[in-house]
Length: 222
Image 1 (cartoon, rainbow, N blue to C red):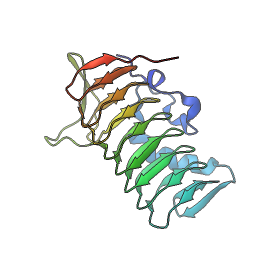
Image 2: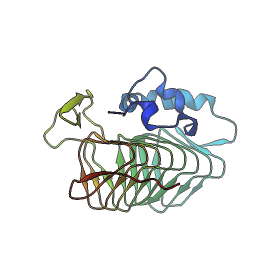
Image 3: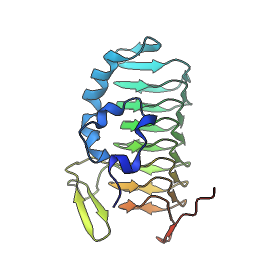
């Protein structure tokens, strides 16, 4: 079960990498996002513009007029925030990310070059370098039965202690259209989730999860 921070993410592609210091698993950063963000904002370079009381935006980023940002939030360089995107409650967005039409982000952290471009909900989640979600992908962050989120991996469950926990999506992972990542989903590096899939638990890196639940090793062409 390779889902430590180093297993899933290239920290060189995360300007906010200091949030992971002293942690083993990526979801341990979720409760720290707000306090880290407010402290980190004091160290931002001068080419970050403060556009609201607790909202900072990097040079080259474009924001459509219909975008709503409720801080605290830090948005990196050369990002694209499209029509009706909604960012709220402690979000850090890396460089060159795309936040698309009617996409909502809440208490989440995005590495560089993440794309969540069409009608996505990303709540209490971390998305690695070049992770991409297809249209309509939902990171569900709250169990309908209540209680804390546990990660299912093989025949064991890992207690996170978190009531709200969406998904951890590794570097270069691809999530197909209209898939639902159930609370505590962990998708390894370079993996693919087929469209219309309900994802529960751990998907190892370099695998394909088909919508019938079949898990196969992904062939990576050179």
